[in-house]
Length: 175
Image (tube, rainbow, N blue to C red):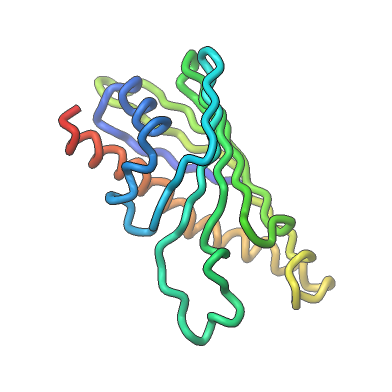
């Protein structure tokens, strides 16, 4: 299922691009649904920066669901390549658990809009429900699109929330 989200950030493109690429862990205080972001790997190769970040979502798992939903299910790896020359990146999400179920990748572009920036997030999320324990194979194809739609619906506001976090971070920094 296609993911599309746009956000206007009232700061120059180069400042927004650098903040998103280089200061993501510092944005956590502005992200209500994120517990932590840790940079695990960074490799700069000329105008390309390769990053691997570990994200942990914030949220209490209800007692009734703790036997099914484990804390590690609330975390994922974000693999990204950042291209300074085009003010863009491409990314891939790798879940810590049930990795075969979730395929999610895409890219962001940072476009000049007057004195500000429009962040355009584009990607694809696919869930292979045949890989989910307990889901009958004959139902996997039927419920997969419904679950994808639900997940994308929850995901889009959180993607925009990161943009709001960048804006709050830059304002606090006095950029």
